[in-house]
Length: 344
Image (cartoon, rainbow, N blue to C red):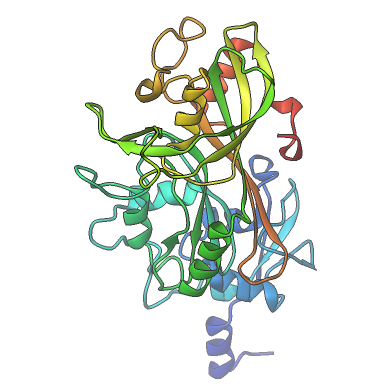
């Protein structure tokens, strides 16, 4: 059969579906992350639409964005993904946000759906701007509104500059409002891992000490409220538990804050005589437990469990240890692999 001119045009406009095979290096990669690597122009919301309609499949079966891939699986890639688009929001960064910053945010993503984004924030980068702080997570996200569906992503809670780990971001105004109320009602379960000096006694306990803000030579900090400071005092409660110890020199602890005050965990551990290693502001910066230890803050937002803003199910995300803490764990003979996310 000889193709007519119209048939040829149709074939050009609708090229065949492509099948791509998962490489060995891509095993255990999430499906949405696989698409970000191979098709950086493809937005998450549009990928979800293709998945819901069955246009994207894995081994001929319907799939979800958070499915984990295995080597050798075949991914159905519809032709529309490769068709040229009139606008390419994922490639060109808006003014003030570099392509490098966009790549950094992409690498932080632990979980994403239409309403929520969960990042694994590295230590050393601020969450929001302030005096002398020009580069921060909030600004980088604001410059990527095109990547997240056109609306500005909104921070739902905060982490200190030197604290790493789980950071929750809302992708819509409605989700931000609902998640904000959840934090206000203390319905979010937060778990932090830290290395502290010495070994707390008892090995499980509660620190219930009100805090007040106090300026100092090394910047703002908080301290224990004194009698007569009730008006300024902020109620603060932290539960702690020793997971493992290094003799009497240091302890790996799980911290679960009930309240969310500035520097709460750092101040509370210092107040009970066990400051967090690498925290000079709260007496944890000198006399490290071992030689050749990294002097950075050893505090990591390990896990967050919170009701999904849609009302369906929960968000439960765990962040791996940052490099500097992983090196310390190896140096001190602490084994984080012994503990699953549910045993922190």
